[in-house]
Structures are given as C-alpha cells and as structure tokens.
Image (tube, rainbow, N blue to C red; front, side, top):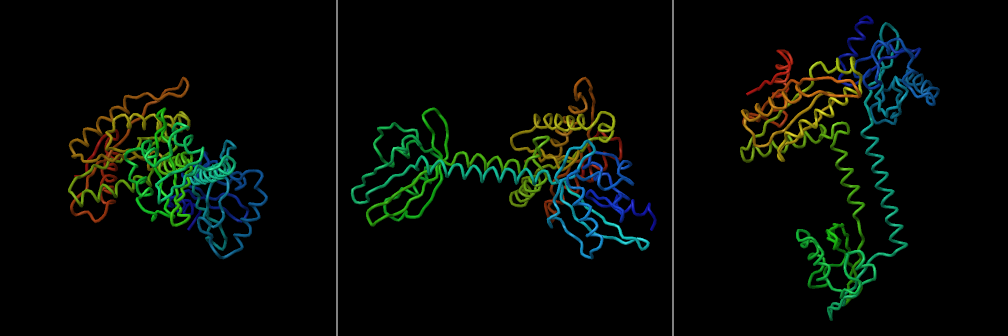
Length: 417
C-alpha cells in the first residue's frame, strides 16, 4: 500500500472522510469532505488539520487528536465528539465525527468519518424553543389562571370561571353549559368533547384535545382534563395549547423537509415508498418511482459558484412542485439527487410526466444577480413488481434506469420495466 492507495481507500468511503498523520496534517480526503468544508481536495491535502477547526477550539482539539492517536479504541458517531468545523470562508458548520486508527508502514494515522450535523442541531434548537414555549405558557397560566368549570351531577348545573368565555370566544354573559362548549367545537372533533362530557361521573382523570372556532373564524386548540372531586361534583380544567401544537407541527415538518428546496427529505421518502408498496401488495394499486439528478452539476458549482448551485436546486424543485398532483410527492435525497413518487400511475403516464419536467428544467434559466445558468437532468423510472420482496426493490430499479440515462446521452428518461 502506498500514498495513492491511502487516497483511493478514502475515496471508497461513502461519507465524508479525511486521514491525518501524527503531525495532524491531512494526508488524504474525499470529495464529500471537501464539500462539507466548501473547499477543494487539493486545498485540503498536506494542510494542517487546524484549518478545519474554529480558532477558539484549535488548542483543545489538538490535545484530543493526540490523545486519540495514543489510544486503541475507536470512537463511534454520537460518542460526544460533535463539534463545529470551519469552512474555507471562515463560517462554521455543526459536525459529528467517528474516529478510528489505521497503521501503515509502522506509522499511525487517524481517520475521521464526518457528517454534517446541521439538521440535527436545528431540530434540537426547535425542541429547546418548544420547551421554552411550554414554560412560558405554564407561567402565563399561573399568573392569569386557567379556565375551569364544575358540574353538579345531581342537578346538572354547570358553573365556570371568567376565563372560560374569553378562551372559547363566547359572550361574557353566556349561560354556562356543555352545550355552549360543543357549539364552538369543530364538528369533526365533537366526538372528543362528547367523550369527556358523558352522562355519568366516570370521566374522572380523562384528558382530551379538540379544536374550537372563535367568532372571527380563528381556530384554537384546547386541552381539557376532568376530575371527579366528590360523588356529586366533577371539575374540568381547560388550557389553550394552540402555540404548543403549532410548534409541534413546525418541528414535525422540519424533521421531514429539506431546508434548501422545501421538498421532503430521504426519511420521509422511505416512509412514503414503504406505504406505497404496502398499498400495492394489499390492493394492486401501483405507484411510479422516479429518481433523477442533475447532469454535470459540479461544473455549475465550479463555474458559477455554490450560490448558483443552490439556486438551481431550489428553483428546479419549485418547477417540479408546480407539476405535481395532490397525490404526488417530491423529495431531495441528498446533494443533487432527487426522487418523485407518483401515486396510482402507469409507466406511460410516468414517462410523460418525466419528459415534461425534464424539458421544463432544460428550458429554465437560473439567475443569481446578473449571472444566468442552465441545467439538465437525467431520470430513471420504475414500478413495483409482484416479485418484489420489499419497497426498496423498485427504488433499485429506478436507480438502474437513472444510471442508464447518465451513461447514455444524459438529459434523458429511462424506464426499468
């Protein structure tokens, strides 16, 4: 094995990877590592590892690397080594790393597998915001008081606090009754409300969530909990959880959405493809899987810069979304790799759709400032087969068809029937 062998080995690793020597100089790196740090491989080779570390962390990081090279145990992803890397322009990117050692001609090297941790970091920030919002909501309830009601099971009489009408959008002089609450509850949620306002005292300890519509049309989420105080008295506590529900929905969306393009991400693609396969097995309704990527996309980044590359990906995603039916979904699988799932679609219709978006992107002119660029895509198409063992079989065939498009003329559509 020679230096070239080391570089070849690094290039075979699917994730971003760099190899450093005892002097903490970079001996080898692959394209994905260069992409994470937004630089070229040539600029990484023989450069100090310190170049990839924020200045404030250089001293501590050098000590950690020296300690690691003296140890025998590898360190996996998620072992507390998440940190920030420094890109070539000085900006920082959250990363997670896995470390291992290799020995070559009696020399120890450290090999680092690197993953961009931006999405996970953003989700954690959203979780912290959600937790902070819940704390603020709790404090607001403590200061202002929760809305509450109580019902006498013998007489059926209902009393409630002054907060009840304001929370539910009722008149302040509204006669307290469960019928008044049910009147503002959305029809599709009334079964939840009915479950808590039963005809007996067996609702103690039950909590439900439902939506109400205020007079101006605003929809709010309400959480209501009942507790039986005595044999004859039941009490309920209400709180408005709309902000919490909105944050939960935002967090859910961001966990399955690609930030740059607004398309769904690979995690959601796997879920949807698996669901489509289950539908095919159960009912015979088939879907078409399209995979595509941009032809010579590296040239766009090299010639026009990464800002143009991002613009191409973002605007092309919008062009694709404009062509989708409600039953169709588009995804960014990573980099310039994309997928589309067409529900209940024949191969003929899938080809027609693919040709339409191929021509649309080919005709588009992408612009950053006064600079314009054009791009083309290659597409592969496949459907499920009765012989498939899992949902991924159709994806493999779509990728094979995409490879056929890439190795022929590019800017074309291929089908694996």
